[in-house]
Amino acid sequence: MSRLQVEDPTPVVVTKKVLRGERNAKDRPVGAPLALGALMDALFRQFVTIGRVEDPMEDGLNALQIDPGSAEIVRYVGELEGTARSQFRDELEMQSAIMIDRWPRLSPAWMPRTQERLTVPLAGGRVVLVGVIDLVVGSPSSGSASVCLVELKSGHPRAQDRDELRFYALLETLRSGAAPFRLATFYTRTGQVDAEDVTDELLASCVTRVLVALGHRRSANR
Image (cartoon, rainbow, N blue to C red; front, top):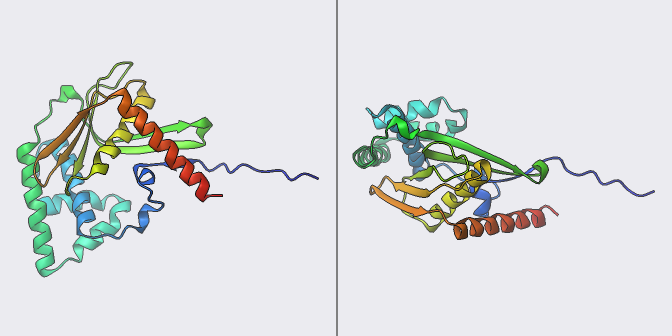
């Protein structure tokens, strides 16, 4: 009697971390860089939404405390003491001041949307591409390029920063049928903005990266 093979119904989820070769994001220990990035993300959302930041440490922690997934980060910051806490607060306040000074106030007509989640199922749901974009500006695409995707980074520029945004550009293209017209990374340590236009070549290279990542996942699961 031949054996029946039951296909695993669990979809393969591809995120920016999978493209970087990280198998389990939870293995990354919480430290000052990760905590700083999480707080700056929260402050950026607040600033874009209401246009002000009063106490960076308090505002950022209050925002993270309502997210169960950020409990470990909140605990880490709460346990900082002495010089370590002072240095962390100083860095947070400096980057917050740069963000407020350099990031423009956005008109409501631009339809700014923070923490936009993109989920694109492929191959009948067997593969799901997932991403969360810090900021999307512009009316939703409907056949023509109309949005700009923005990511905020609190660390030093890295080559993979562009790769992450290009992955999000692919997700937006698959979701709406139109590519974003521009991608931008805002670095809060310096106020620098790294921007690039979206091209067919850029999207094609990202498709290749996704296929390679899927191949690696498939080989690892055999």
